[in-house]
Image (cartoon, rainbow, N blue to C red; front, side, top):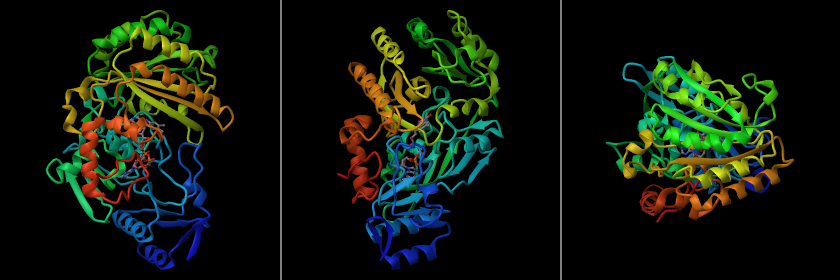
Length: 467
Ligand SMILES: Cc1cc2nc3c(=O)[nH]c(=O)nc-3n(C[C@H](O)[C@H](O)[C@H](O)COP(=O)(O)OP(=O)(O)OC[C@H]3O[C@@H](n4cnc5c(N)ncnc54)[C@H](O)[C@@H]3O)c2cc1C
């Protein structure tokens, strides 16, 4: 036996066989790169896996799964490493790290993209935008395509083109038995349904195939700012304005202390602001007409909603989500921005203490709501707005207070909660996972788990126990 982590002894024969079969890198506790590879995006998690299997391809994933089976180690799976509750790594676990798997192939004629499990959103966008194409994904470029897609995938073009899973065509997957299977609407359709929202419960996806949509490369996009004291009026105006907005328009409202970024006027730096960030997934001239009433409401202190490359817009929020800072989130959907919801939002936002805390309120609806709710495992197609209440501090200093602010804010909104997006859940227990899917879908997912992973081999995730 080899002592690899403090309290985990590994079977030497199994380890030697894994190393012999592996194309990628097997990283143990003594490896100089161990610290680099165990780190994940959220700096508040400091975890020590027993072994890190950095997979180069499908054969490595199969070998790693078989090693996990043989040794009985708990298994964590990492794509982009952005799990809110830090499930991308676990103490004493075998970490199956897919981040080296970067293959991406766009077929501009068929308008499809094949994407391996380690690809990040910004990497995929660069490949697709080279052809004026896009796959709907999220709003921060260093998030993983894998984890995001398996939970649903919401982002800047969702109201026009739907969720990431709404453009998903097929999936390659390694099961808990180390078998390679494919899933699509025509092949293993039950599994495909579950993978469109059911997370990492059913196996390890090695590759996704998406349909691409036409977009840009120039879009009208960016934020319009007002001082936060004006937020009660801004949000009331916003509520009425977006009620009739075309699906091309996607907006996210952010409350925060204005960051010292070049596009923010210097006199605003550090001052509480509300911003409505737009992205128009259609012709720029048309977008200008749609966005004009917002730009003319009250007296915005800054307006940087302008034509720009979609790639630039996609990276706009990256400076707000720098890796290794400390983060905490709690999320809920609400039907409407009622006067009460607005008043709670503004009251709590004015209490933000950390200059790094910023939280998005997502406008939902559009194409997402136009598909039948039971078409995918993703729940919440009828949500009006998604609150992703989050906080951020540079280090542990001040983190507990800021986290308390998140919890209190979320509790204050409790009377208005409807659904919750599974990818925005923390480590909140089995009932919340059930809430995220709703009773009917949850039972269907449990049956699927029983079929594909009856031993709950993949359990370090938003877990759906077999049953
Ligand atoms: C800064 C930031 C911005 C975000 N923005 C958005 C957004 O705009 N839209 C949105 O929808 N979500 C967003 N999210 C939430 C995001 O979708 C989830 O955190 C998602 O799980 C991240 O995926 P990942 O691959 O980066 O993370 P990981 O931590 O690597 O993966 C998360 C979980 O997914 C599973 N998983 C990952 N890869 C695989 C695989 N190949 N096969 C099987 N299971 C796998 C595992 O269970 C793993 O624990 C954001 C998160 C962060 C931190």
